[in-house]
Length: 377
Length: 204
Image 1 (cartoon, rainbow over the protein chains, first blue to last red):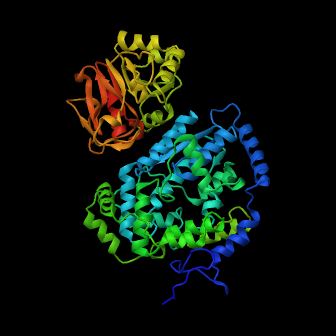
Image 2 (tube, rainbow over the protein chains, first blue to last red):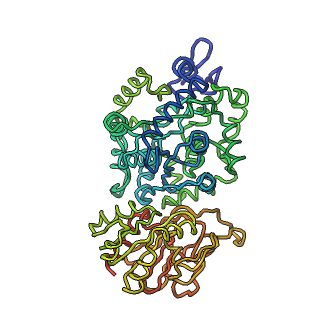
Image 3 (cartoon, helix red, strand yellow):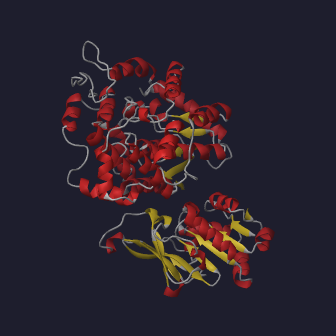
């Protein structure tokens, strides 16, 4: 039995089974931030100069076209703020691309609408076949693994990449950032979402209908073919400027009437249930630890405040029964069946086919090349 | 031949993709000769009512479509704002619509409804089909369609309402009058049900 321990610097703890502490009780997430990210992170004038150069390239590439780049819009803080900046600060003309996986909260819909309305942009919405999405999500529930959000996440990413490829769009703006997500969810909690061997094995065993239109994207397609053969670049502007959660929320609220979510990723009703209730209560994985640890690293939250907040559950006990019913009904199963999946034996990605070695190798390679620094482990 | 009217509003490519998948002859066009040669039309549309009407007028296609639809009796299907401009007028603007199906486009008023819905109405929703409407053959009303709108078609003649959707209250979401059809939802985003509507439209 591993003795419970929490990092002396952030709030990651032994619920991350692979966590390593140094002699001062500082965890490897903190160390990775200081060693791998901090020296290469330029949320300052240096970053701004780098981004101005990229903006010029994007504008040149988009000359005469209706759009000069594309960006995925979930309605969450990162993508909302990025859209605001891209249009008002940098004069870019992004195609605003929303993938509807069927679980948008009213708040997300409203936030997307107020932004595109006030910025005078059109919203391009791609809708995932609900029957297939439901079947894929149910397959994940039945498999017993923690990473139930893969069907949604994978669809978002794959749809955007396929669209960019089909329409020859060369620049993808991405709201990913070190400021609020420099600590990554451990692999045991949220396994690689593009491991096709795993996706196909889980759906093959537990799915009930073929996924004919569900958008798949293998890592070879979007990390290799798209980037190096088709020359599509993924740009993360929020890493090249000062970006804080508090300031971004305020700017969006004041300018657009955008309203904040109680927690990161809660723009999806499914994710709210999954990260707020399912992961912590079934597996003991509280993604707020990861999110708060990022904010601690980047000076936006104190460790004390994080520990205090973690004392409260991530879900609202008053409405959880209602949420259970909503999720079950939407998935077309009974509450009893859904509760059964919650109580079934715990499984991990290792219980199903996977190409972990390939992904680990890829992650290490990208880290060595300096392409990705916040690496999942 | 089905012509997807490319007057500068709406996602013509997504609609064309479905016809391509169905292997049905279609063309995306604003060319007068091509439009005259077609026997059916899809009128897409996104954005605000007035902007869409302006764009359609500027494209110089209103007269031609009037001749083909009313003079020749060719069938036309308006989608989303392409449906709304089939009406007479809209809360959203001051310009008159095409007036092909009598009715006024109203903003969904959350305040007037007990269980107040949020706007826009975005996402999947079931529909209630009224009477026999050939365009809904093989459509599963429970599975429904994909919606993205804040306005609805308040048809003057209730006979022209072919389907409704529950969003706070029951709202018309499909209208028809003779050879003119309009859908508030997006069949091009509604997978199997949407494909059925386009297939049916090609066959009626």
